[in-house]
Every structure is written in structure tokens, then in C-alpha cells.
Length: 236
Image 1 (tube, rainbow, N blue to C red):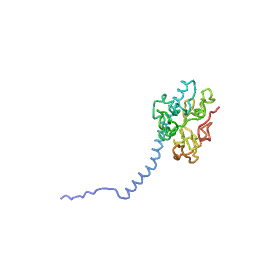
Image 2: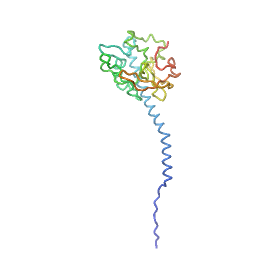
Image 3: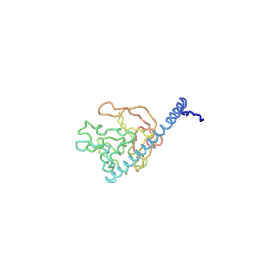
């Protein structure tokens, strides 16, 4: 005579489930910042590529125009032309104007709204990059242009960088990449530069109070620009 054996189902106890959930939560807390940093590194690499393309495009323009840098903005007929428009034929990539960590940082046509006919047709709408206003002169304030021969130290002269325009119209750096901003230089190279957070400010706006920005002071790796809030000036 055979005995019947009862099969017993195995399962997790409540304590075991709670332990597993706690372990998953700990792993998530450890890994999520790592994944976020990895994503930011990828965006930083893309931003570096954008500014490298901008540097190449600008130097191609300079070669075509008697080694003269374009103005940051100037009157072209009844509309405002900008640096972003004049180098656009050398870029041929609409995404180059945008930092992937802040793709709609500045609305260029909006900035000139109400001024004559505004920004000229074909001007890229958004950019995340500012320019050195002592290298790309304001065409409304000066008819002159800077030439390559006027640069004493091209490898230390910033051309473009992660930036924005604050309420006092400073071209402030923006540390979008783990405490650093990316800059391109007049010899064509790019690099990341450390910053220190210097508190809040507001974006320049022609339509009312602009949104909040952060001020960043340029760190020691910024060379000539160390301690400033914007990359402006020509090191000699």
C-alpha cells in the first residue's frame, strides 16, 4: 500500500520580499546617478562636437573674408543679421546651434522682435552658444572688424562657448556639463572649463522679465578669462 505524499508549494515570505525590494531600491539609488552622468557625458561629447564644427565654420569664413571675423550682429537692409546666420552656409546642420543639454536656451528671433523687421530670414531659431564680443564685434556699435592678425594668442582666445545673455546683457557662461562649460578657441580647438556657481540672475528679454539663470565664475583652467562671468577679451 502506497502512501500519498502531499506536495507543498514553496514561496517567498513577506520578510524575504521586503529584503529583495530594499536591495533593488539600494541598487537603483546607486545606479541612477551613474546613468545620469553617462547621459550627460554623451551630451557633453555632442556639445563639444557642435563647437568644433562652429570653430571650423568660423575659420572657413575668416579665410574667405580676408582673415576678418564676422560681427556678432549688424543691420542688413531692414533686418538684423547675426553671426549665426553668416556662418550658417559653412555649417549646414541645424542642430549645431543647439547644446543638447539645453536645446532652446536662447530664442534668437525673439531677441530682435520689435526691432525693425527683426532677425533676417534664415536665422536659426534657437542656440545655446554665446560669442566673444571683443572678437565678434557688435556691428551696431562699431563699423570695424577684428582680423586674425590682431590676435596675439589665438590658442587662448575664446570664440564660442556654452552661454546665455543675462539681464545686464553679459554673455554669461553656462556650466551645463557637470560643472563645466565648453568653449572653442581661435586656433580651432575646444575644451571644457571648470566653473564655480555664483548665484542667480535672469535672462535678458525684450518681452518682459526673463527666466531665471545661474551665474558661474570661470575657474583657473579658463586662463585669461579666469574669474569672469563671460568670455570676453583678446589675450595678448
